[in-house]
Length: 195
Image (cartoon, rainbow, N blue to C red; front, side, top):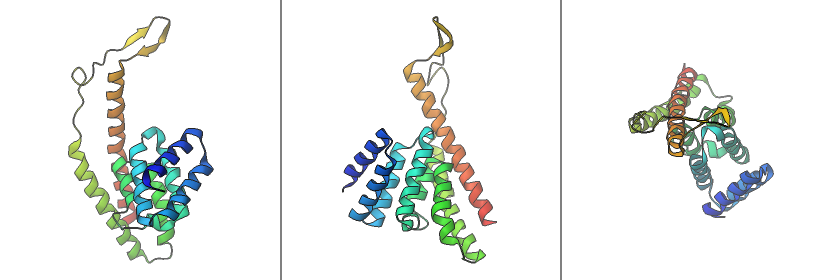
């Protein structure tokens, strides 16, 4: 199964709420490609499909992958594809899934120094990614980037109407804001784990 087919199968499963189909698609993909390709493909799918609204389902997808093959959470350490997707998207849900399902079981039984070193390396990757992406964000100014004027619906006074382009702009701003806060929280959590 190539990546395009894999993505199409996952899209179909999500469209119909087919959780068993998601598991089957992931396991099938794992048998047809290398662990590294499977991990990279799933990270790419998560990156492309992720929104704050879909964080839970994307974390569930990551969990299925890690359960199907725990090594996918350990590949290319500390530059793991799944970890990078979590940090780039600033998703605490993805990050917690990655840590709880992949890293904590791996570190169980290791001495304290090894554990701290492991988290320190993950922290360095998260910090570097944050520093790389943060300058990409630009201010969004009401009146310039979006109109900001809302209309009332006469038939329903509690409803507010907004221009479609303005909504898309504000939705994008909210996603980016949540990404910034998520990365901050991921870095803070890794700092606590290193202490």
